[in-house]
Length: 487
Ligand SMILES: Cc1cc2nc3c(=O)[nH]c(=O)nc-3n(C[C@H](O)[C@H](O)[C@H](O)COP(=O)(O)OP(=O)(O)OC[C@H]3O[C@@H](n4cnc5c(N)ncnc54)[C@H](O)[C@@H]3O)c2cc1C
View (tube, rainbow, N blue to C red):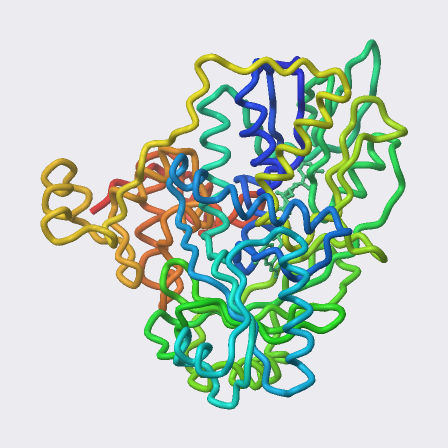
């Protein structure tokens, strides 16, 4: 591990990851640090996965400009990084005359913002675009530019690309203190590891206010706005072809019906402020309201198809609800990237460009790398292969013949690939491969994956965790263990 860098980025969510990848195209020594055992373990793993269409908020907001710019960057990014993304389109649907005016406002707002692919629709057109909609729909907005993405795979790909181009990643590195001398910041982790860097990027999500305090920089408060989502089985008859939004309220985009890019279905999210930044609990309390609301959009939605629920925390900076991305006026060479609530996922690539320009303003020399390689090798997933392709893959690598996760059809080859790419926790492997994300939620495959982790890494069973830290999966009742071999 080096100790001196040009830039240290704190936080390996989608924002830190996009910035790290952008900076990896310049002749800079960059380190990306995160307190968790893997990247994307914060808000970036627990969201709706929508690439928004640039019409929900007015042009005066920084978040709007970056949303519109970010949206346009996804096709090229997908070509380079091979993550699951589809421009399936978005519908905002109205059921009452007075809602039609709000639809018109969204349309005009989107046009003013420079969003493309927007269309005002009457009832027939809407039902043609999405036959599963409630027949009482009277009109709406179609945003052909909207899309869906697997958010954690996007972050994994950004980080992998950044690392391929020289960025160093330090995990389990919880920044606890910092000092500044001779033009260099020193950041120190809870376990005593320290790195020095000239420039610091604060991309710590809901903890951006705590990190700002560590640097004696601006005092602000990040409010965690919790969103609960329900995930429905891929067998659900309600799976729509497009993301379905209701007409938004003043505070929220409302409860949505979201087809995931991998064929399951999401309903949510709620929006409730919480003081507890660790509050990721899901409750049955909201379930009835959420599903009653969702059924007004698509009547065939059923609670019986729920396979799990999860919660994420939006890092909101109130009262203006905008992104705050700026050079600190108080701490030298610190760039604050705070208040990145929705549409942070959509805006992430544009935020990375914006931060690069701020670094330039701080006299950071940006010389393009001659050998920068934006491309990542494709990962072949068994579930995407035809029978013939699967047979070929198996002939080359017999591990493709062993299906580990039956619900999502994930082979041992993919689990091993995830481990080789640095994902050593059950959740890291789940988010990389989808093993454990299907109907049985890991009931069948978790034990088999644990054994493969042990075999590939040499860890004992008592060392394997769900998501790092103390989240051990098996108790060490029998004393020291030896690595297992897969049967
Ligand atoms: C329910 C929900 C739905 C959403 N849906 C969408 C959507 O559909 N489309 C969209 O565009 N946006 C959406 N968003 C918003 C989007 O998810 C966020 O804007 C984005 O994920 C924020 O990314 P981030 O990198 O800033 O934060 P995070 O992903 O939380 O990353 C911050 C990282 O900082 C690390 N960190 C914190 N403190 C420290 C420390 N002391 N030391 C080291 N590391 C530290 C954390 O571990 C974390 O990994 C949604 C959000 C929620 C909650």
